[in-house]
Image (tube, rainbow, N blue to C red; front, side, top):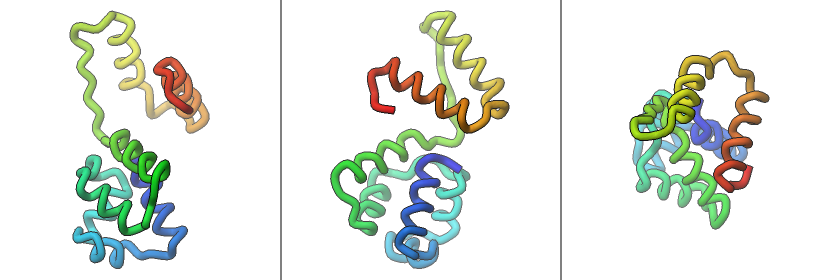
Length: 122
């Protein structure tokens, strides 16, 4: 499951909406919506994100957060470190080779650390 899929599922659960009903309302198939929630599809288009925001009547910060989660939800990540430092290549490879070995607490700690290094909120 991707961060976007996790949030989308939570929004549906909070509002008691089925995948079938939501899919019909935003113009996609229930199978596509299920695949999006489970991380079997890439990040949704900006148009679909807007439809979801409108469907749930999400405003301001929550809408921005949903769009940010969509951008961070590509289930197949590809990194090109050519032209970057050896440290960048080492980090990318270390994560690629070992990410499945990390538990949720470690993943969240690493994510928080990277965001802090980038000057973003945790």
